[in-house]
Image (cartoon, rainbow, N blue to C red; front, side, top):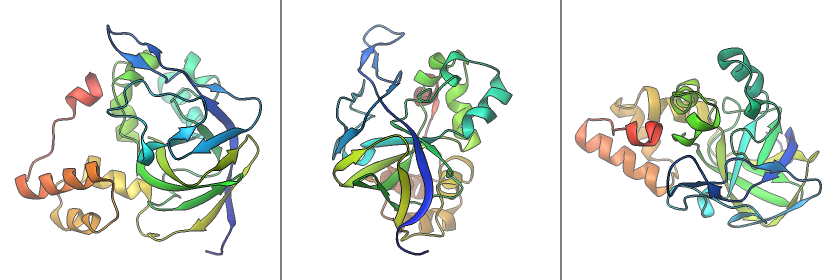
Length: 230
């Protein structure tokens, strides 16, 4: 694929502040709101954006969360109308995108947006906070099973982004590893040894690499109940 190929666009740029959420002691910034102007993007994310639990959210490998707006129609068909599905930001994303999704994007893709350059670092691992966000007791598991999880990026070049920006593909080092295929490894074919060994050769974030190593050593899947159910 040629340099600077346009593969999508930004529908909205969103940020949020961490506020008390559902359970005593829990914080979340999932209720993000669209910005009217442009946003500065640094190595730890968008200026003015926060994360409720830095143990699991944020950091350089989860600096910016992107979600395909086309998925919203599918979710309305499956779970019915919800306030969080009325406009971008329902899934806590920083960039609501058009024209691309987990089936067309690959691990390690370098995306030029505005004056910033992002690199896809991992897919999202849904957590229990989505169940409350959508008033759907199994929403996190639905997200995981559907493959429509969204994805995280690290920031290779700081800059600014805004609604209407093109998303341009600068590099694709792993064209055989779409985010959808990677999700298959983690959630549906998680004990297929040859597939795990192939995935282990990818430049995975440390937590995902450790997960694969544990599966190869134990022959067992990890318990997802705490993440999905809380």
